Image (tube, rainbow, N blue to C red; front, side, top):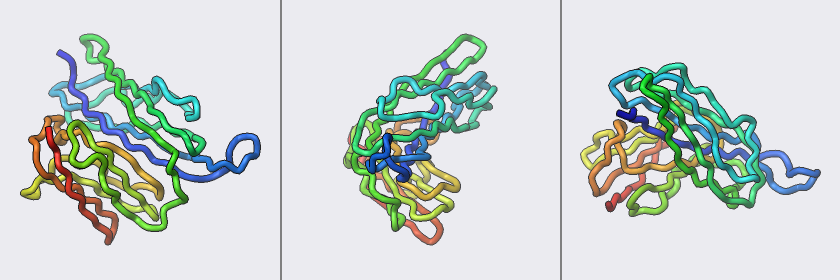
Amino acid sequence: MFPRIILTCMLLLCLGGVGHGGTSAPYSTDSELRVTIRNSAPTNMYGVVATVGEAPDWVMFEAKVDTVADSLLPGEARDAVFNFSTEVGESGAFEIEVEVSTGEGIWIERFHVPASSSELPEAPRSTALLEPEPNPFFASTSIRFNLAKDGEVDLTVYDISGRVVNRLVSGVQSVGLYALSWDGQDSDGNKVASGSYFLKLSVGDYSETRKLVLAR
């Protein structure tokens, strides 16, 4: 029986520096691809390693392998973090590979993360939760938000009764532009029913809510 792992990915783009060769092309530095790996199995997982597989040649990673944990307890979550730089004006996708040993063999999960630097603006002047796209959505929707300053961030999906469905981001985040996706699953990795949901971003005194419509 293969383990159940919940993968959540968040992309942070930070603008700074110049392009190679002394050109003045906008250049993203200190950017970050963060993958949260949660063990939703009833048993421990061992030897959890995340690896960047295929990636566009315009993305330059500091390292493509992150040893996430020697072991993950049931319900425990850890982050794999990949720092990179990229020139603005390109688009493509990352392939992330997560390898887990359970004592019964090796289990590998791969997934793709769309990435675009074609619309990378200057550092955000205000904190904002942008409209998810697509919306309504069938399989997954892309969520973007801006942080004008460092702060404690909570980004949560609620159902119409106000019950927490999935907490996508929780913790202190740095100023920047963030992108992640929600695939219509709850925090335990179960698919939720079609219908209306609410996405709420809270940062200090700021809060904003967007309506999501899942149409399976």
